[in-house]
Length: 82
Image 1 (cartoon, rainbow, N blue to C red):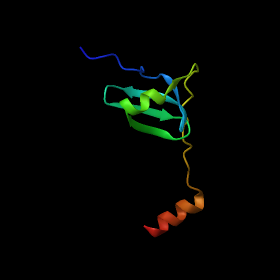
Image 2 (spheres, helix red, strand yellow; image 1 turned 45 degrees about the vertical axis):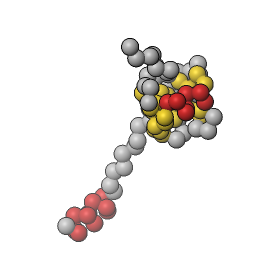
Image 3 (cartoon, rainbow, N blue to C red; image 1 turned 120 degrees about the horizontal axis):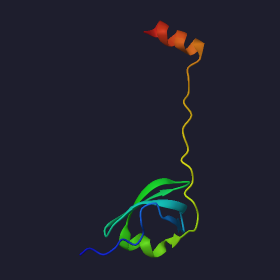
Image 4 (cartoon, one colour; image 1 turned 90 degrees about the vertical axis):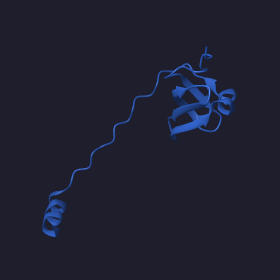
């Protein structure tokens, strides 16, 4: 029987270097964390787990990227180039 992972999926944690984040996956070998300011990082579980601290917070809302639309002049230039 496999041991229970140290952190459940979506657990809120804090790393001393990368700050707050959300656990995406955690097993015996690897832990994947999405940090608020640094993005997604993959760690070896036996090394990173002793350095993590649980946080009592709600997960931050995912930021949606704004779509950039072409201006009329840019469309005209692209059309002329093709």
